[in-house]
Length: 246
Ligand code: ADP
Ligand code: MG
Image (cartoon, rainbow, N blue to C red; front, side, top):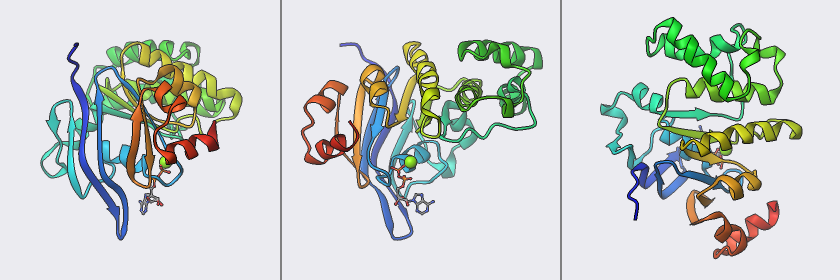
């Protein structure tokens, strides 16, 4: 058996907001080059889990290991971790007064101090990868939602992350724009990016996921490969959830 690195290892993770216990002893492994799709009803804790992995939220207990290193917020350079763990959100938050290329190269220039000609060269290559080579001088307001989200993906990739987290990246898009963003994500998966994706796009899960994880009420209740989860869900809650969306 091929031994692949565990890129994300979550052990007994608990997270509360005040009295609200949101993540309950969550255990999850994502191996290098794997695409894991996280599904579950609204409010089940999917975004909170992703935000804990990017340290936008801090856990109460449990262990988070990223690429072999246990990350404890108190004694870790979280900016460094956030460079390794890219995140794409439902809303793109591009800088409106910067061009597409300027958006993509901002963090490499400012955070990583990459020389400007190198940042531009890499930025252009990323825009080509997401199919927006001809838009580098355009401002975000001139782009469609799907194009903006592809810029957001390129911007995240510009930091050369080892892992990409996606939190419902197509949920805010008009239906006709969903496909182009999913296609970009599938390309990324094919190139071997390690990805953890929250989405309601079950077609994407079937096609691109190695593992589908179903979350209910802060707990992971079932995981398996897409055909197992979609054709033979074992847990009644998974069956009920899939019944509402498929
Ligand atoms: P999902 O992404 O699966 O819809 P979330 O992780 O966003 O779920 O939310 C899980 C629960 O945590 C919900 O009850 C939500 O209201 C609550 N929650 C999320 N973020 C916060 C916060 N910053 N403060 C208080 N409650 C929160
Ligand atoms: Mg969410």
